[in-house]
Amino acid sequence: MNGLKSKHLLGLEGMTAEEMGVILDTAASFREISERPVKKVPALRGKTIVNLFFEASTRTRASFELAEKRLSADTVNISKSGSSVAKGESLRDTAENLQAMKIDVIVIRHGAAGAPHFLASLLEASVVNAGDGAHEHPTQGLLDIFTLKGRLGDLKGKKVTIIGDIAHSRVARSNIFGLTTLGAEVTVCGPPTMIPPRIEELGVKVEMDLRRAIEDADAVNVLRIQLERQKVNLFPSLDEYAVVYGINRKRVAMMKPDCIIMHPGPINRGVEITQDVADSDRAVILEQVTNGVAVRMAVLYLLCEGVQKEPPPVDAAVEEEKTDSKVT
Ligand code: CP
Image 1 (cartoon, helix red, strand yellow):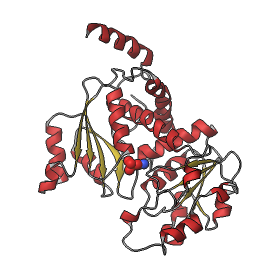
Image 2: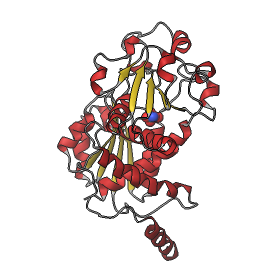
Image 3: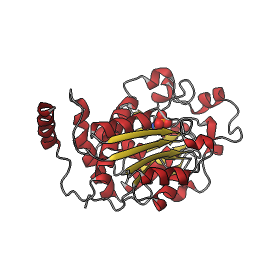
Image 4: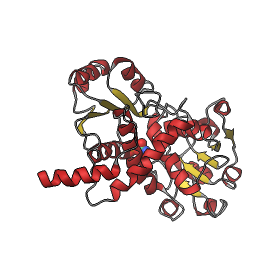
């Protein structure tokens, strides 16, 4: 087996450190493919993957599509506006029709928490959660962990602070599940209205004072203020948020000199993070994006090739690719 317990990736809640290790090790071996002049291996040739994005996305959608293309899978992209969902078709009917076309994987982003779990209960295909409401965003969590491990090494005992709109953040939840399983010490900080009650039960520390939250951190993960998910105003104004919780040069000076700054994107520049900090050497934001492709390649490869025993045959794949180019 591939080392994963499920044929779906629905969340990092309940995923073991060993399972995460398999994905991250596989991602490490795939990362190099994106550095090649010809960024393609035939690992998923013959597999069909549908990207079903019912919510806006730039990074996740492009990253999954590139991951699929670099593994030579056949891909189909469906968004809400261009599909029969716009005519009233249900998610169930949409998914069952796609399944009838004998697809292998559905990657789904949906505004409703649990939508990927619903599809997983219906379909033969593997389902990958690309973000469901405020619930989970497991590949973002994995790419953040991959980036953290690349920078900090073993995460046991490392201090990671997540700042901002924790209540509406699927990124925060996936990071919390993954990081605590790997032994990191996670602190959350933000306006009291954006810290969910009893979040400590997930194994994190709540620190209301921003200076105390960041001064010992090995990494600070700055979240986007998700205005589209707020039903009421949870703080007086964006300007006030920036003054009280924004990560600016003054706050970077309070951090340890080697503390890295992360952000899942998209960034509200000048709100949760200033322009100069987002573009500084301390920020690893674009490194996260680069790592995202490798992590998604690993997830898709492992889910599709569940019965394969060996890690990805990168070198063999190069040889096969060379032979293919000669033939064609
Ligand atoms: N980080 C992230 O999910 O970005 P997108 O919404 O652009 O996919």
